[in-house]
Amino acid sequence: MSGHLTAVRADASSLDDLDKLFAQIKREKGRLDVVYANAGGGSFAPIGGITEEHFDQTFDTNVKGTLFTVQKALPLVPDGGSIIMTASTAGSTWAAGRNCQSGGLPCFRRLELRDWHRTLRRRRHCAGIARRQFLLRRWNPTFGRKHMTPRATTSLSIHYRVKPGQKEEVLGEIKGILDRCAKEPEFIMAVVHETPERPNEFVFYELWKGTRAEFDAIQGPKPYRKAYIENVKKLLDKVDVEWHSPILEWGTNLTGLNQS
Image (cartoon, rainbow, N blue to C red; front, side, top):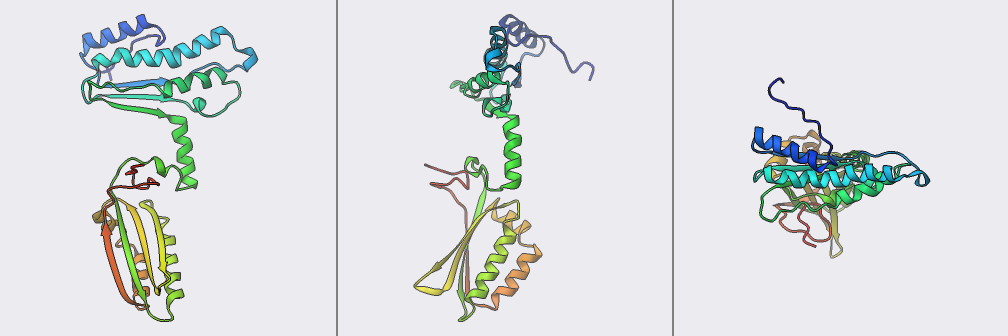
């Protein structure tokens, strides 16, 4: 890596050090495409043992240092550049002895990064929280879906007119296929409806990540889906299938298109 990296020793809580750091970057490179500001340090002390030194060290590094690092870097970041800020879980979860750290990090997490005269990519990220959310999603796939960003989704509505006497068997087939679908990583949700006025009819909706072409390529060839189609068609008088592309959503945010 010789010739490609330059190490600069600086204290993030020192404005003089930050000025020297960014002056060197400007002099040697002229621009800064990515700023990665990490705030997560701090001393462990019970509430009765916190000193002014503990407080100043934590807030100078996690709050003051992060804010002024980003502020002083901004003139060097071109349009389209990235500012990435990370913290630990101490700002949102309890841990023994992390009183100062827990108090300082919420300030960082609410730091406003907008610069209305610039086109910058901004990210605030908590590595510890992301790990926790990953574990929660691992064991509870529905966790966090309301926070999704807009992305391609495909829905299909399927209308079955069932042969007389076959309703329960068809419903069992539907439950079976949707149980299998729910294990697919691209699956979002499904709802099955019946109409009292037409007791031999079912309508159900499936919502999937991705486009229809991706659905056809990934889900279409699955053996269990092919077997389901063969099993159920002999129990039906008529099948209607429609494909849809969600564009707006209220209440939930399964598609990342919530308007409320």
